[in-house]
Image 1 (cartoon, rainbow, N blue to C red):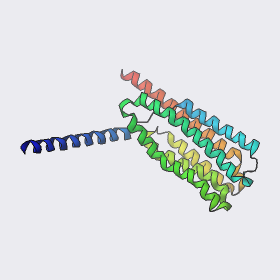
Image 2: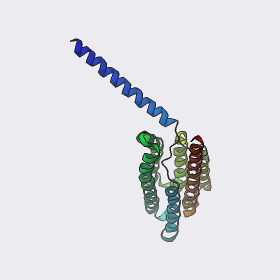
Image 3: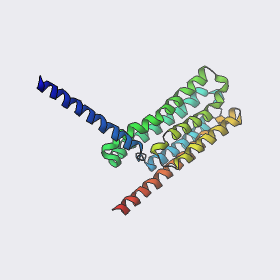
Image 4: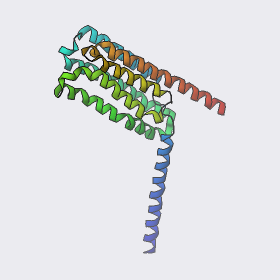
Length: 218
């Protein structure tokens, strides 16, 4: 009976210790800058946005008459870009964050995921429920993206706030147009190309600064 009591006590202490370790890892992850995003891949998504804009100009000059095709084009582009970023994020985070990689990746995904889900659902709502305001889609997409950036700022460089402000302003600018002009190819390709180049530049210089700081510490 005494042995069983001691065993239960040891198991309880072990469980508590593991819980404490997880909490510490989570707290460290929340205060550590996530370096899993690669500048080259982020720049590639800017190129993808420009290519999608060119494709829209060539094959979809009047998106108001083919709204489903417009949604398919930009959602496909978004999925491709997300896949590129996620693929490099897994390998890059494992290399740079080592034992903290899993926690850092989960945190980064969890912070941006609500915005991603909202952005994926929104076009279907506008298409099937309120098609008369479909022209608002590009602006609302950019505003939702900006909210995702703001939600992720705790694990990003401080200057990432500029990216959030950029997409917020471009989103409001699209809506301010007030009609189908917001569906022009430049409103999406231009906003996202510039925005993602800015993201890439911020991560590049942040990583460079981190390397300099590490060298100075050594």
